[in-house]
Length: 94
Image 1: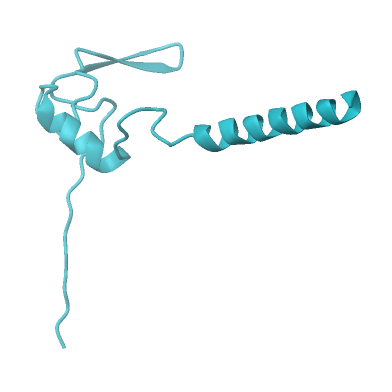
Image 2 (image 1 turned 135 degrees about the vertical axis):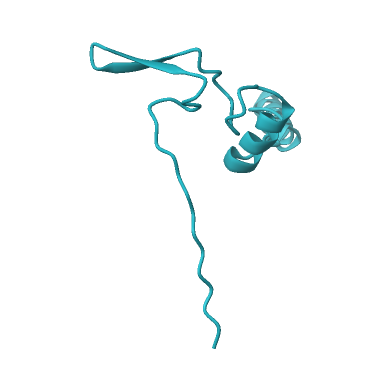
């Protein structure tokens, strides 16, 4: 039987890229001066590589309104309702 052993190293800091940022603690808030926000791989640059990493982690949507809206069905129901009102009105006029 084989056993797989994995090791992982992790650095914990106050800012995303501790080497490129100076943390400032003021009024119980931590500010990172010089920290490039959006730097997902902590290389000091915000570029397409960071976008690719964020897309993998957070998912990607083409737009906030990417879901189809049932407009044809809604318009069909409105037309059916209008026709029924017209038919009812003609029935009472006769």
